[in-house]
Image 1 (tube, helix red, strand yellow):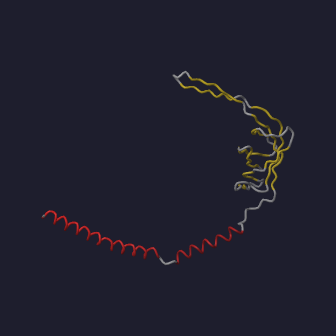
Image 2 (cartoon, rainbow, N blue to C red):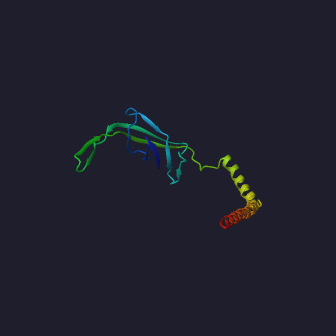
Image 3 (cartoon, rainbow, N blue to C red):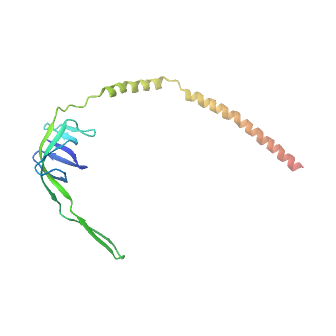
Length: 172
């Protein structure tokens, strides 16, 4: 049995009786911590439940064993041929926790909610209505074609008038 839990923005796989180093928790040594942000849960039977985004009715109980600091991480920056070198580093704080139990309430596969069940037939009805609806856009296309055809001869007339005036100008 294991669970995927979010602690301080990071995801960890937790199992019972296992110790983990997690980012610093503001809890005293020896105190219990309840982790409620369970993203996934796998029970003893091998059934995996993935949350959307969290799994409901599942929580992880842990005890803070100690707090400490990791080894120093060295950050070295250099730009060649420029005389620039910079050496920095830091030590990350952590909390060592031990997982006591992974508690799962009555987990059931998610049944469709009443809202989702009501929406599905509406979508099917809409699809039927669209299929039965007469094709109005074809009529609209014909009307648009007739309008543009009516405009074209008018445009030719004005060009014909211009051509006549140009002939008159050349003759004069």
